[in-house]
Image 1: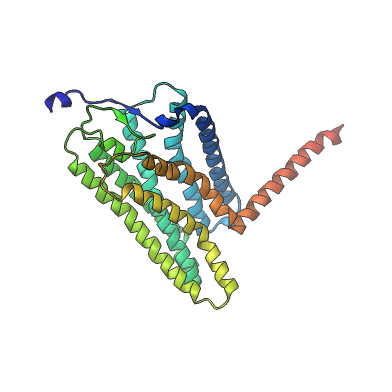
Image 2: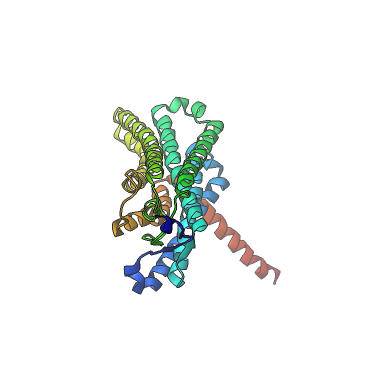
Length: 323
């Protein structure tokens, strides 16, 4: 054991998808386009919310924060993955690995809490509509968002502080396409029981508490909707939370599968596939899910598009008038 401890690993190798390396050019193009589309559509949502007074509502305030998180969330993973597809060197330093793991975990945990805050917002809007403006004030929204960020980054800091104190020796190959908790723990050569237990308990806390708030909120929402007399009113009430509910189901299904279990497990291809869903696919789909069913966002987008077309037409006509 002393000999192993004397060869502390400072460089890891991200294995990625070794069975798909023959398709690395195609995968690189697909991932690059996915990354660009994700960043553009989330930045577009943030811009629409800030530019339109009609969208100055708590729901869109939270949605803007979610889009902001998604941009950084995918940016922690995809640029390094893209570099690994085109470079022979797929190594990452110990400090770089811990940094990637910390920020990835922080944004993941922040999104968990933020989604529960959005569920609470929908509960107040549907179940207590007369008190909505008094409960969901600007100060209340800021407090909920600040709580989301503080909880996410604090929980992740505690996790990483335990993991980074472990010693890593022997194999330096991380069987994943980024530094995730389970594959990193599998490389530790010292007793990891404390770090594993801390991480497991915090994972349960950061997942199950927000999920419980979300589930209770939607149970109350469904109960209220069922008591609405007309079918049209029921559809209208449900449409205001259907997009969020879809995002919640996809997000929590994947994260519970990956993290609400003991961490020292083998990282199979299924784990990589599920990880790809919530780190790459979900951030790209979320804006589509929200925009497709949201008439206010659609109107804001059409308004912005028509203004841009009008300005372009005017700018093109000015030179012709001068001639």
